[in-house]
Every structure is written in C-alpha cells, then in structure tokens.
Image (cartoon, rainbow, N blue to C red; front, top):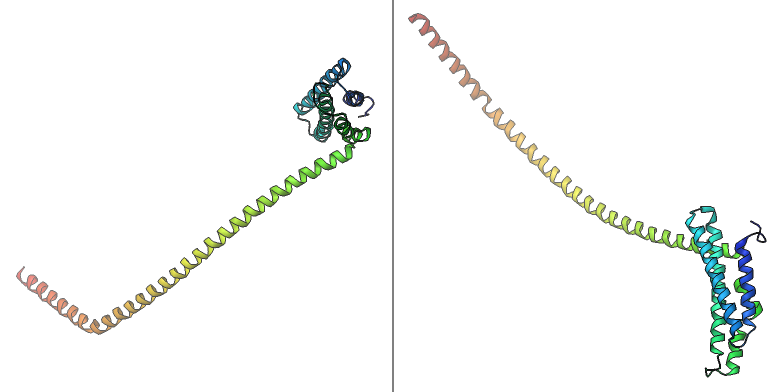
Length: 218
C-alpha cells in the first residue's frame, strides 16, 4: 500500500510533526498542553488501528502489524521523554537551566527521525530475527528433551539386556536339568524293561486260565 494514501502513515507523520513542534518549547504553556492533548489522541487512534488489524487475524498483516507497533512505541517513547523534559522545566521545580538544556539535547531532530522513521525492512528483519531466535530456543529445548529421553531409553535398554542375559542363563540351567532327568528316566526304563515284560506275560496267562475255568463251569 502506498504510504501517501495510507491513513495510518498520515497520522504518524502528523504526530511526528507535533512531537518536533513540542520539542521546540523550553517551558510548559497552554500551547504545549494543546499539543500534548493532540499527540495523546493521535497515539490512541494509532493503537486502536493496530488493535483492529490484530483482531482481523490476517496472517499477511502480521509483519505490518509488528512494524507499526514498533513505530508507535518509538513515537510514545520520544513523546514521553519530551513531555518529561517540559515538566522538569516548570518554574516551580529546582532544575537548573543547564540541566534542562542537557535533557533537551537528548532529543535532537536526528534522534527523533531515528526513532520514529523506522525503515520497514529493518523492522521486519528485527522481527524475523526475534522469531528465529525464539524458534532456535524452542529447538534447543526440544533437542535437550530428546537427549534426556534417549539417555533414559539407553539406561532402560541396558537394564533389559541384563535381565535377558539372566533369563538366558536360567533357561540354559533348566535345559541341562531336563536333559539329565530324561537320561535318568531312560536308564530306569532300560533297566526295568525285561522285568515289566515278564510281569505282563504272567498276568496274561493268569487271565487265560481264569477264562478257561469259567468256560468249563458254564
């Protein structure tokens, strides 16, 4: 948008002119009070305009809003400084003329321009730098959390590895005992196989005799 046709920029330029005009006074007067009232109203209007832009939730306006906020903040800063100097120049105070001139020299024409006429590209660069710095801080925090999680997982894996090693040793021991038990059973079976065969033959013969006797009696 062209700055000439932008109402916001027009109000900003008028406010800068009013602040420059106010800085030309050395003591408070009715005229300075009127200028101060005009500047206060202008700053209120500028802040209201920024609030409306924020409420629109337009992502494209984010950079512009940041630049305008910075510009209005610098206007407010210079206005407060000049107003404070005027208040300290009141004849009822004990401030010396030399001290007043020293305070006034802090706000020169060049300083006012430096604070209020902000290069939009520089403002955007500063805003981007702050955003990138915040993102890097967040990334560093996330990496730190991941490092802690990795350390915790590594400790848990080491503990589980020790448990698995102990389990393997227990399984090997049990397998050896089962093998020894099987060999003992096979040995007992081989030793008693013939004896059990003889017993089975005797039982079968006895059963046949009983069946013959029953058949004869019937």
